[in-house]
Length: 106
Image (cartoon, rainbow, N blue to C red; front, top):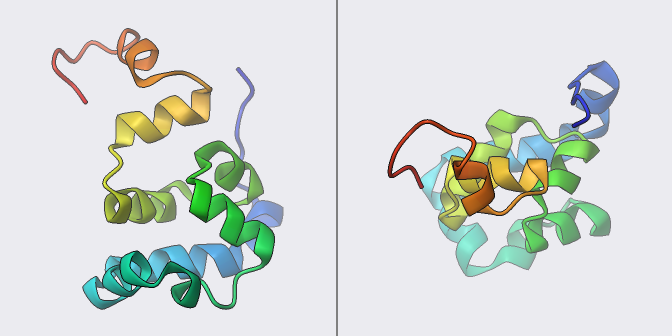
């Protein structure tokens, strides 16, 4: 498994995306995103919009999205942390959960 480093270069590249994701902390912004995603994503590049539409967690992370901002997107879309981390690792949720020692985790 490769290491993921969130450095200055990734931070700068992902700034626009991270600002969008961070705004999902506010209920009105989450509602707008869930009801009118294309309108809510105005200002993002087409590549950024595509990653968000597909919930491509690994691509978002590799692009420069902060884990803490991705958590806001996950919550808005009803995706658990284990589901998101499994996607980072390229695993199914079931495979990922077998590596954990938390019975009943989802």
